[in-house]
Length: 447
Image: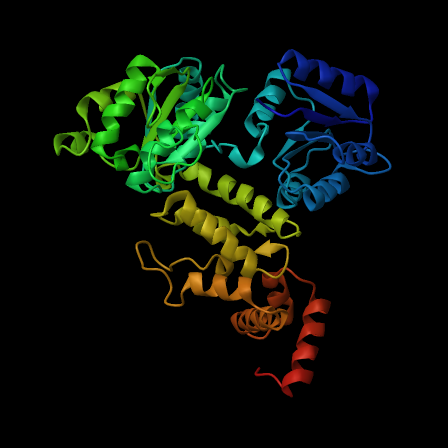
């Protein structure tokens, strides 16, 4: 389910035409006649996309874009203009626009771009799919979502298997019912049975009250069994019965209870191999593997790397109450060239690290702190230690980190302040002020 599109256009006739086009295309729409009205609407209305004209008064679309990125950095913005020059388009994209749409455009082109960038209801679970392989996978996932077939999602650790499971649930007829997820590897074996199936009061020592298990909690909706290969063989047999009979019996219970739910499962292991080795029941494997979905590793979907990084920048920057910085071309190149053995989790770590190290509104390649050559180990200085130190640090320590970063930029620029300021994403005046502070504190600075 997607959030509505906000159309911002001061031409009444054109705004009406845009509303009609998107409404006929199946989108919910809200509208505003200028930038100020749009900002007022956003104070109380969640939207999944802003579609704004550029040439408006009193607030033009580029100013509106800046305000939206400052206040609601996770919301994508598409700008429209009849004056579509390359320089303006590039500037808008650097300022955070998702896309720049030159007028005139065909209705189908508009609908295609809106579908591409529109956030679902729950933007943190939005599946980024710019890469052709990922788009093809999501197309299949949408179709299988309409059935009640069990789905087995496989892929390396950190590829986003739970996000894909939630996507399937949101696109299914059960979308308005519960989505319950349980990590089979995170719960001790002696507690997993009770957690899944529930228990009656007095069923075992410590069972002081009745407990409703995950199967019952997910009744009518979807149950995700994350890392299913970590489930003990004894529980695999009970799970198989639930899938076959659609009924569950609580620990200590005497009668089965009917449940209506869809089961999704994930694994980062080779399941056929686990079956061959006797670590996973063959009959359960075939019961879960009605529809297999193999989620590609991040390095196998290179067109998703930069869009994912930008989405993460917006999300983490919003939590830090700052504007989402722009990525420089060199930073983008390095992100695209990296191997991402840790998949999306590794990318998320890199983004958080860059936000900590970048003092301004621009993220340079150096802020990413990536290995210098493909396959190289991580830098000697522990990133985890840097992040832990900064997060737990007092303000004076943050100031010291900023100072070190500024001095490093100066050295890298050969002492040329203008170049250093550009690298740091700050004005030359601000840089001069900070250097003067350091001189007063240290009694002098190295050249």
